[in-house]
Image 1: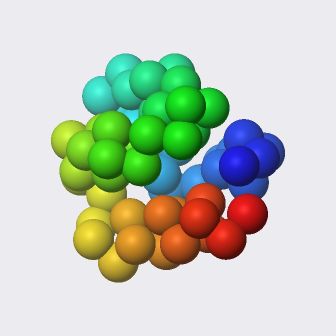
Image 2: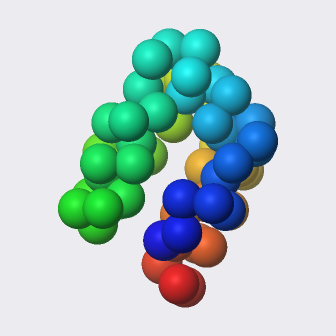
Length: 60
C-alpha cells in the first residue's frame, strides 16, 4: 500500500499522537493486517475508518 495515501489523514494524525506511525508503516510493509488494525485501535481510530483502511489496503 502506498504510504502517500495516508499523508495528512486523520489516521496518521491519530497514530502520530500515540507515536505509532512508523510501527503502522512497518505493519503495512509486512502485510500484517492484524497489527495495523491493533495500532489504529490503540490510536483511537473509529471502526468505520479502520474498516475502510483495511479494505483499501487489501484491494491494492
